[in-house]
Amino acid sequence: MPPNTLTGNIQEHRAFPSKILRNRRDILVYLPPGYRRFSGRPYPVLYLHDGQNVFDAATAFGGVEWGVDETAQQLIRKKLIEPLIIVAIANMGEDRIHEYAPTGGVYAQTGERKKRSRGLARQYADFLIRELKPFIDRRYRTKREAEFTGLGGSSLGGLVTLAIGLLYPEAFTRLLVMSPSIWWDDCSICRLVESIEEKPPLKIWLDTGTREPGWEKAAGLRDQLVEKGWRLHDDLHYLEIEGADHSEGAWAARVDPALRFLFPPPLPRTAKITPAKKRQDLIKRALARAKLFY
Image 1 (cartoon, one colour):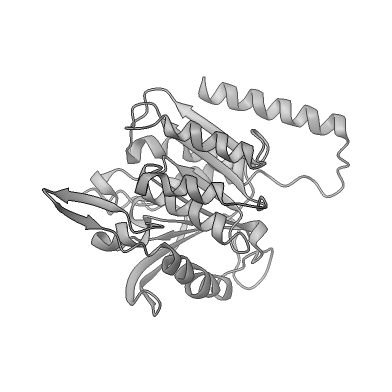
Image 2: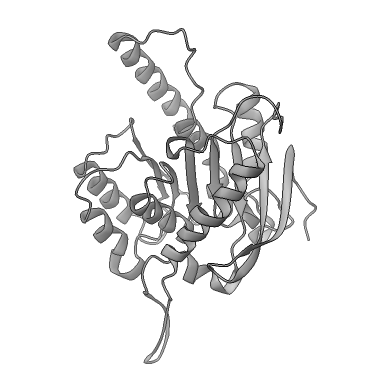
């Protein structure tokens, strides 16, 4: 087993109970440099699924972690992102596919026998909104409003992130959607996007690697979001990574730019932003992204 690789101030909440889901899971909470529990500023919060893979190689799938703690530490110290609290929510093993599935789709088939998910994404969202988030808000110095609260994951975790964001924008508005399982239940997430009548105020990072099965579907999802009113490089960032596969290592490599997009450093309070200055800032950010990825 790989050694523990936790970095920074990380609090552990073992066997956190859920009455809604009738289970217990481990929760890890990363606190930014300079955090003080009883005094000082409140912080935005990012909740991440598959928490075993987020901070620690000792618990990560295949021994490969996302390194979110190390990446956040560096970006915060360099003032490249806003200091934030990051909550890693462990998955429940065999129940993962049920909790992360927005619909009751088929996930395996042997002969004529089909295994179908229970589609517990709404119950999982209730757990996040009614049980976990209130606990985090009571225990830590958080900015509780939805505009400061993010949600993220990869694969099925990316799928459930986008679904929960679309269904509950009053709780989460900054979405980290890596390599989402768009194929699930004949693209049920596409049907959910299509059903939107009024665009919610979501800021979305969406990506895929070109060595992932069915990766081309991500561009179609991007186009759907644009048709619904999201603007590329404004409240929607879409990225195709040449040669990237569907793995923890691939997602770890995208944590840095994703955090920069979703949690940019706040502007000085005295700064007056003119239209020309805003355009210059957008151009600078686009050039910076180009240097990062190409």
